[in-house]
Image (cartoon, rainbow, N blue to C red; front, top):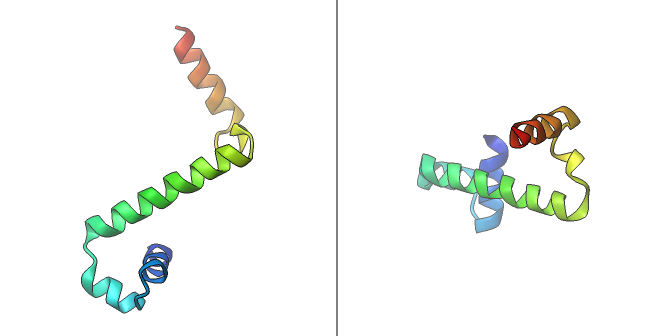
Length: 67
């Protein structure tokens, strides 16, 4: 959670204590999820899918789709 608060403070030019005082739980949740999705999209663009999924997860997804 501290990394989310730090990243949010850095992005909006605030001190972490200001973020804690002003941001709601929903703000922190949305900021965290969007950062995760952006990082994942960037990883998919720059590397293969195996960096975000294990081989057995991919196989299980494929098997479920085949059924």
